[in-house]
Length: 377
Image (cartoon, rainbow, N blue to C red; front, side, top):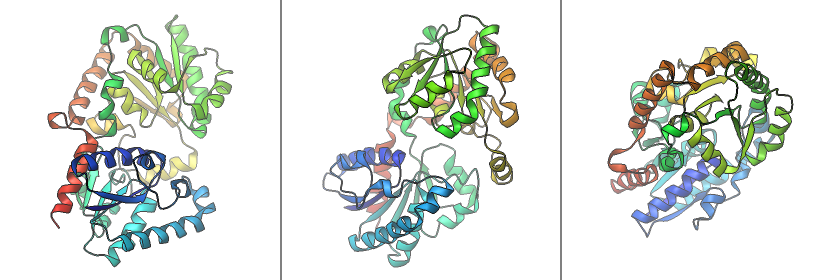
């Protein structure tokens, strides 16, 4: 079996290396080539070119690197056609990978194409789902509601293989008794632009909560790339949280936390799996808000809420994301309250919905689905 795998950014590289391991465990003779990052190359995988060439986000960075991106698309298409694999596997990064797939499908119409990570067709540009049928044979979804969304929108066949966080449940496993007296997590974002938008609201919320609930312990996990930015930000805060540096300290903080204030993002799913009651806040620039209100099809932007179909985590967006309402909402979940118990019950249901049958792991389920599809040819 010969497979061509394309990952275009760091998160895809992480999915990719686990997928390569799982594929080789199930089929030791499989040949795998393509495009990937450092994690994939450590799995005896040679990338066609450095993944950093195509790991670009944002309109202006894409425009600045457009000639390189177009050249890499052309190079990748030619490499796939020359390799004549049994299947082409796209891992996220649809702006790059789907362009490759559309061109390859025209040249190799019988080649199986698998999309590992569904584009957010359920949130915006739903017409993409039906368009994907022309060049995607199977979508491997990370979120349990995505197969139904593709069916509703006329998309390609889609199956739920599980979110990669499921493989790390033990990292987030918590002691419910200890969490009742644990710290409050403060998570204002993992990118500089988000920190700039959310910093003052989060700092103000902590100051007001400290008056309402004196003596609380506050912890802010900070990854190395943003540590300096975070330290500069909290210099202006009246109440300064302790920093949790590195992955181990972050996970320990998640396991111990009694509550959290978080910017919207994947971190909300980590908090949900660690059974941490959370208040979510987010702001975007006015122009992005204008566009989003016209394009986004969902009533929530919070992943646990999307999975559950209810607002388990209250969300405060745009002008609502101010210190006073955030502090009041946090005060309602740091104590043993009806709201805290409501959230915990919802989080127990979320875990049940996300787990795969018989203790299966997402990378193993994805590998099995790929092998089964290729075996049909």
